[in-house]
Image 1 (cartoon, rainbow, N blue to C red):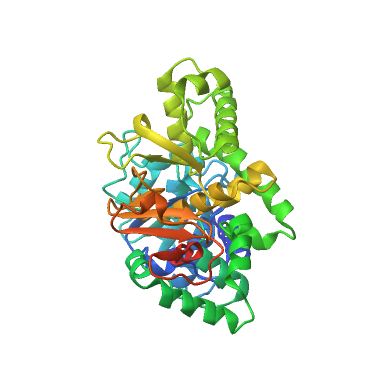
Image 2: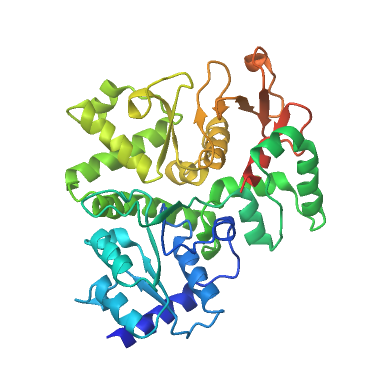
Length: 410
């Protein structure tokens, strides 16, 4: 049976291998004894697993040192993940990847046992962003290094689509020297007869997910993305939370649809309970947490709130701008597009909150106001360390920073 699994592994690796390495792969060694990559559906976790295996096999797809296992594949039959790892270890295997572990019912116990039983085996696994590593009696948090993977940045989209190599910048570099960095990028693009602003508009519609290249049109991409959102709720969330019923799934879909139609969404618990027919606040707030864990929404709280979590949500945005377009099938409000973009670029690595004046506070110290290129400083003129983040602007000046440049944070 392991021969069949080896054959399936090689087919998957051949199909999923890509030369382009995302920032996540280049900046994380993943060489711990046991690593888990979490992230939402379609952002490239499988590709990363395959690249990891190929790196350690010197790009030899037939190397006996590597094995890719799709955790819910029918070919596994009655074999457990543990039995596969045991046989692989006996044959001298060194690197094993378990993809989509959230679909395997006993994943935490078996991965714990594999880690403890085969000390020479390096294990890497991927799972839904909603996966709870500490859930149940088999806490993997002390055994596994857990990495959170996010969708593509604007920089990665440009590199992948146009075969360019572009720099990334830290937040401090963008804040302190954005004019120089914007000039560097636009000059590099100009050498290839490319302009940043139309590319940025394209990214907003279908650049967050690496699989954009598989579809001939934006419409086909949006249909797939909308289907993936439903699959995330109907399959991934129910795999992680088996207590969710069919009625719960229906209400989660109603909730995300309602939020998408209202973003930036300001929660009114009584109104939402009435619309989706939920009896109590506790259940409704649990639904919000499920959607947040699944990377479908981004709740933001007030900067001066001492309480955290769902109790103090000030606004709710969708996970990224591609989702905005997939839900509406029209052009979303431009202000919502801008704010959703900058949140999707900043929030994975920075603390974001809602300030008294301005749109967002970053790391409790930087205030930004988001708008078009003619936006004034009126709303943040009394704030120190405040900046305008402006759309339709190639290169900024002083405290006016081009919005697109935040797409070069990773």
